[in-house]
Length: 84
Image (cartoon, rainbow, N blue to C red; front, side):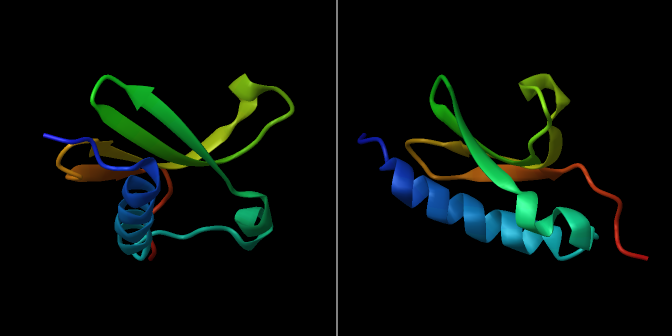
């Protein structure tokens, strides 16, 4: 079985994350500061949206999408309050 390209996984993660974030509030003041980090964990690729801090450990995470690099299947976890 071949591993999917990182670009393909990123596109899937973006679509999944966009759908997951529809139920959450993203404060306007952080929208322009959001960054994407990509991490490798065995066969999984993890795409994290975050607002950088002054130091790496000060980053505020918004969401984390974990996708299997062979199947493209995955899940999204969101770290924001839900819309009221």
